[in-house]
Image (cartoon, rainbow, N blue to C red; front, top):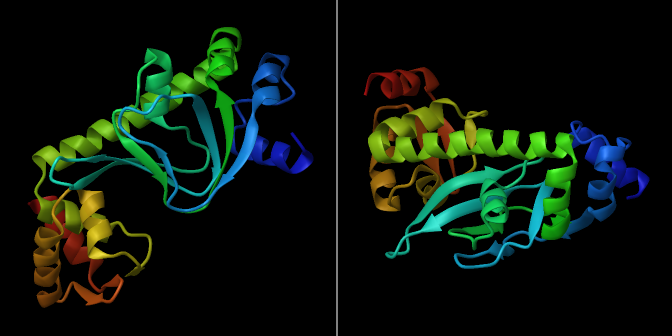
Length: 221
């Protein structure tokens, strides 16, 4: 691991101090990789051979229904590890969903043998793995509960109200995938929001005009 890679590791995974002898095997085995956007990483039934620690970019993990509808489970961002990968490595099972890079991704790959050795031999790594697993599993359950028990209109209003910017660059299809609904259904709600004066639709994006009204809608439905 060179100086630049070591700095990335320290910045994103401070719990896994590379100078700690307990992490020596982990750091020695870490293989830096750079992956292009839209690269498929795994599909349902694929074997799990590596544990990835992301330091740059974003990975999307989703389910695809028999009808072809995509349902976002979660995204893996810098400082994170993939919860499905963890579960598959622990259970020695194949992937039940698919994952691909949404952007260019830089990560460190740990082979499955080293993962098992370090899980047993390094308490810092063991804490890291199970803390990330617990956090992300909670996030996934919350997302599935929202899809199952909360209406599309409420979820859409909440998503728009909580957007980090008033100019959201996203397509209707991407937003529908994120919320776990059909694009046609989402588009109908967006049109209603536009008629109410809360948003303005444009090609490839949405301008949020009244986030307060959207927040009120999401909290009262």
